[in-house]
Length: 354
Image (cartoon, rainbow, N blue to C red; front, side):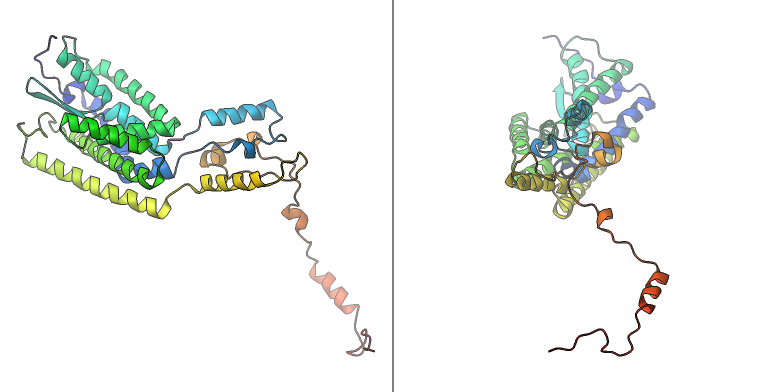
């Protein structure tokens, strides 16, 4: 296979500082989320879930075609991956499939999926390299597609986070392949006792690396051969500072995510929905049964949803608070009632016991 002798590096894909800023600024913001609360925002909070069909879709609340359409649209556009899934998808497609590739003793270091493909293809073949203008749509399209997939489906978010995180752990290609496969599978396994820990090990390193890479790009530091043991910048002040920053970000992020999971872990709305489903399943399923159990509304439905599409039945046969509220008499009426009855003796009005 023909191979080019030209060294294609990360900085060659940015023609000006504007391209660098557009690449590094979203990377920095989303990497902060992944570092300090990646697993928390993916598994515990910020994600939406589909309510139980037997609770929400009662016959009285889904007679209208508009309501049925609204329920279907809400089920289609669920955000099962949450904020953590969106960040993991962007990092996977738009930033980190972080692979170090050595071509003719020149390194193409630590770049994302689209960047990796943009660099490795012209290095391994005689294809012309991508310019900065042509690389921009490739990067945006790959980042957008992966972000939408990971945000919509939870397992896509877990797979993206597991692959992007565990591929950073070791340099040996064989060991990296094995650990990446094992780590991604453990992130996908529905074992709550272990899933969060394995996901934290994936999101904190990839987020810390994204923060460090953003600092490198903002400071216009030459990234080529900087973290390679036989490179020109090895064991210098810049390499030591960036390595120390990466370790500090990693440890602080893992500790913060662990604290959030222990103090604010799990989704109360989803637990409440499961509880109501179990309660409704034990009730008699008669057509004329009064009352409808519904779960709590999500954040998006509460603030941005349409009340006309709300599946809650409006004809619930329960007494409202307004109907139970008694009218308070005015003070002058109370005075009239108290003055109309003035007994002459303490025993007047009471019958003596026989």
